[in-house]
Length: 521
Image 1 (tube, rainbow, N blue to C red):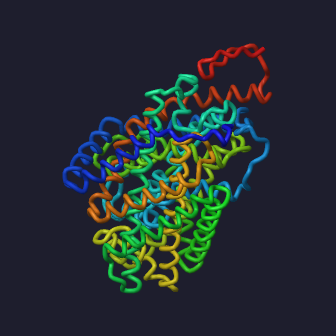
Image 2 (cartoon, rainbow, N blue to C red):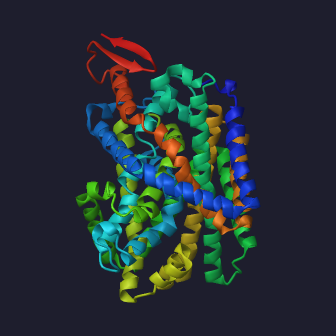
Image 3 (cartoon, one colour):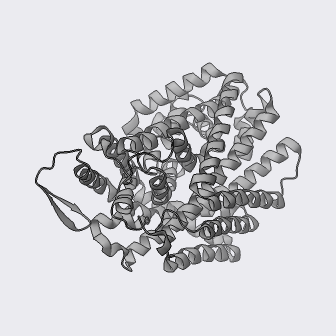
């Protein structure tokens, strides 16, 4: 690992990535319509030309990771450390909060309902007619292949490069087995990999921050009659970023870990309460039926190429979003997974986290669909007219203790996004320094920058927030090229570590790692 006294900041990456984000905001302020139109065109072209590639990339990443987990290479211990630093619960809690930030509350309520209202075209289309398909598609978009993209094969490569080779923990580490140390020596390709990863994850963070201000503002207005104004949204974002900055300043071992545990604890309590007072048997049926539908049609749903408009709005949008997060989440998961085996890593990220996520979607979304069936329009009308936060409030209004539950859901949403904001601030700081323990001021600085840029986007208008969230799909194009090599480099690195750890026999063979040919006798 790097000597902490020698931590330096990559100012080239800092100024180019930060400057790009600032330029985006300035141009949006001058002409937001022009920026929105440009992003829409770029978004559509990205989905058209790279959609099929992304579907294969995610599926391949999941399947190869699963093969590593069940093979003898699953016993390889990562991070050059014998025992895990965190308990299994704390470890999985931090993993769960990485992806569920924007989907934890509002998408969980909305997506099953959307697919119930309008059946996906692969299922024949139509309205209000296919419950298993509705939940199956929600499970696909927040399920196995999505989670696997956030940190399995790329994490294996990064952890080997950083903790075994002692090289900086940065997105460019993914390319080390191809280029060797040259990728760190004032490398244009290396700097580009870091810059596009920062820009992509920043776009994916600014969107949820801004949207949360709008969504929570709606909830507070609905519950307590507080005027849903721009001032309220800005106040909420400022409060959110303050929490994230404090958490980021205290580091993973204290702030981020604590916030993650609180987050998951609150979510479990809410889930249990809704399950007890809600339609428990219907929720269970939807989880089993939806999961069964997804598994039965796993390949056809994952590789569906029929309706390009629907794919661009759903599957390809989500895949681009998760790809954009990929390199930075691999950094975060690398930091918290030292001492874990490849098998533990893959099962936690690609299996355990998706199942927990699907249970949560079943509870929240299943309750909404049940209420809609009992009283048509009681949820769907609010979702169609006022969006996702309205759907959550409509569901809560029809349950006992509605106000308490609604406040609980708003609190969970705030903590989810705050946890992601501090995690992303940490990973950007890691990328700029190459150290897994970057300076506190740099972590706080990026948390504040995310907050300030989100406030500016709110002032410009809600369309600007949608634009920058869609922009992550555009940035996913170069990021997806960065995430392709781990499909074959991950297994190569796993084999090399298995040899080093004596897990496989030391047969005479050549193993290529970092442009160095190592002969094992």
